[in-house]
Length: 281
View 1 (cartoon, rainbow, N blue to C red):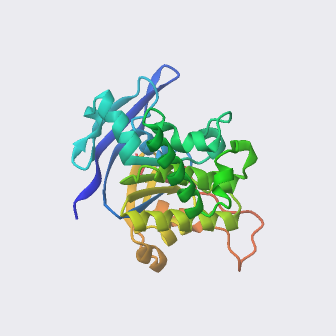
View 2: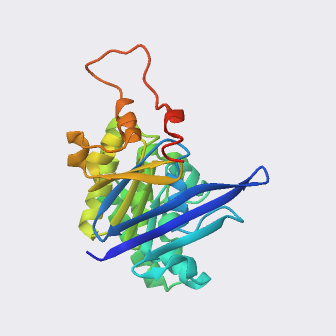
């Protein structure tokens, strides 16, 4: 299959305390259209930085090497106009905290239709109708009323559904979900994940799903990528993960940290990061 997104030897360095810090160290991956890939790892392993590199939303003065290609085109080489079109039409991002990602003083309808503001009255009317349809598809009751609400008037789960609807307004070819269920209760988590998977399948979009929950990723994605200290160290299918066909000790350590419903422990195990520093240096 032809890759919708390909990343080759991506290296990103930022400045911390006046010294360069390499936060991504040779990341390479390919994702085909319609494929879902999950990325798991500890906080600080480089998961979100990878998403930011794909969308060219890196910190100021970040140093980038390697290449990112979307549908064969080099993202780092995009002009300002091409970059705006890429972010608007091709890539949709579902952020971890929708309250932080959505303007709190603008109505939900503004969020969903703002890119149509400069178009004709009929186009704006059609955009509002489409926004209502999408809100209905993501199981928000009375979508017409929801368009007139402010973000603080919606629960976290409903606002995350609004974020998904905003991504779908332009039918993106690539969906980037950056820990979209972290702030949600377990029931809402499963609903949001099922919705994202349904949307991805229906539209044939590629998706990168970032999470700390390796079992959630395995249940949702076609492949599971394990990240540690800015590197992708292992790629597994869900079948390999469930069968214990694991090559890297860090991946095994992540699995060992899962809470058990059959075994009572006084203290949950943690990943002994110092044990892997030399192996993944």
